[in-house]
Length: 301
Picture 1 (cartoon, one colour):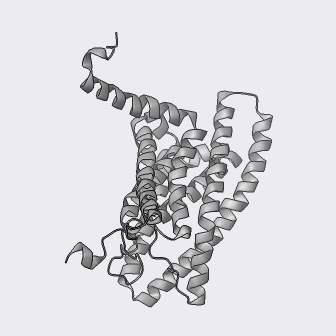
Picture 2: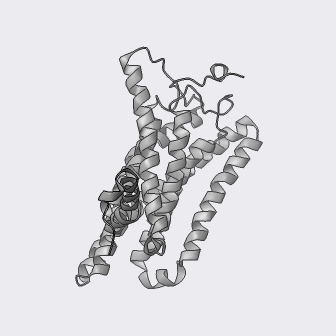
Picture 3: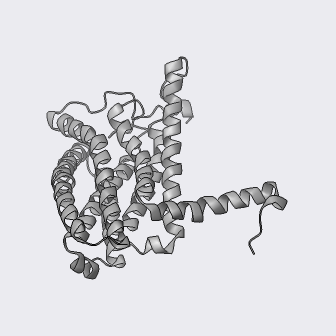
């Protein structure tokens, strides 16, 4: 079977300037998602002090799922394929699952920060690093368990599972991301305002501010898609009126968020920026310079 018979060609014919721009945009978006998230992922993996903090474990989980999102976007966004229920070019629900994992990681991180601010003493006892890893493993397992169920059941049941799952997701968005965000901001402002100026207080403040900004961008890019999926599934109309996910603005927005999230992480966390420069970029640049001009690279000591 050839690529042409599968439709594995650019989603839009490269015969006009607009189509070429759309093609390049999708290619660069996929590359940006992969490179930015990979940078943050390596920074956390290579720095033990970051790996010891729970919040960075959730960042790591988000980056892993978003790297997979970027890789899959080369297929579902750049090529002329339809990632839908009974399409011959579908990904068997795997590509959208990576986006869903990013969603669950941010939800879990939101709940984790809320617990840490509201009950700091019980949080330090309950949420050890191992328990945090169990939480992360649990939602990864749940996501791919749902993928397995959707691929084993008939098409009609799979549609129902998608509808119900999306509806539950919207409920969690409203309760956790909006309700807890408002309460978290009020509590954090009150509690941190009473503490004397210290490095620990600044770290807590930056952690809270970071999760609030990440959630705000997340809501802005995801809510339109969730509302559309719920409406079209319950009304029985088609959800895929565009040629593929790379031409559908509602499905491009979550991918843009996948590229923005690591930028927000780096912008809002000094420790992560330091790790990126010292653990990732500096060794890479030094090795590259050593290959090109070994005599000009300073030798320590």
